Length: 456
Image (cartoon, rainbow, N blue to C red):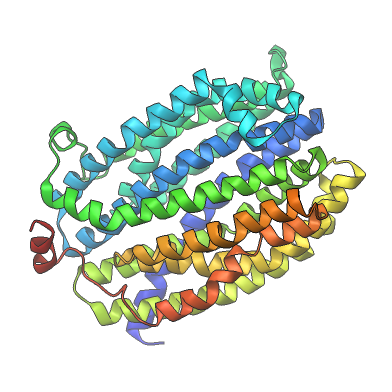
């Protein structure tokens, strides 16, 4: 192995391992919710799974903002420009604040309206209302934590960020048990306890990020950069992040519509899908870490002006994600008997769950490749318009309309509908590979020439 290969491997592994661990720990939270709540009753678990879709939509906005932050922070860090990272930090917070408070207000004051979007089962709606009102506070804490962690990861504090995430998850799981079941003399709170545990753990993560940021990191969040945004940062961020935000929203709302479709197929289908969603997220931890780590590695090289090396690193990461996606897809299918034995579902829901997990094997392969290329490598070089176009057409021209027609017009069986709803990632693969080979993502966003263009 050459020195260049060793440098690439060492840098990528140093990012992937902690980010994978971080993602894995986050994936344990819905697992603990599902396992503990299904012990109470199936509808409690389904309610929390559907109510969590509100946080999912919020996270679409946060992911777009942090993706833009990652995009420029990685390249500025490669360039050695700390002052611009602080300006970027302030502008990102300015974008995040109104979004976080809007979702807080909706969950606090309009929980019934939100739950009626996802299901028409009265008991599930009732449980969901209790959950949303309490968990609404976590939206504010977690929004700040998302941005703080983005800055920490891009400035050399991946391990610290991971430690915070692990602490959050441990706190969440312990408090889940305490509040849901009423341990140590506390009242038995059920779904409300799951919401309270999530809120407290989000506060823990927010405070942990502040501690690391101001005790170790040289980057500071300054009020002047929040109030008065730098025009170069603002224009550049808007140019490359707006397509990413549009992509996240159109794809995310489409993804939410999938939950709406399944939520109206009955309690058994909803419960089985809730478990499958957890399994998907759990086995996708490595894929997301590869995309996040790859974006930082490639972005550093592009920002430093080493375009050919960035291209070379992108090729290596793409090959790795194909192999890992295939392995993870097989693991999902093989996990079916174990998962069914762990959860306490009705016979019908268990049957749905088995075949849903089998079908997820191809979905995971597609998700692995697409998340790493579109969300990682392409974004590292500012190539965000392609993802918006690709995801929007796939979701809204194919998956959502076909899903509605198959479920409510043709009245196909639940598993047939589910098969159709999980084709989106595979449909995208051919055009993603063709676009990748055009190498439009090999671009230095923070070169003096490019920055001067942003101000024109």
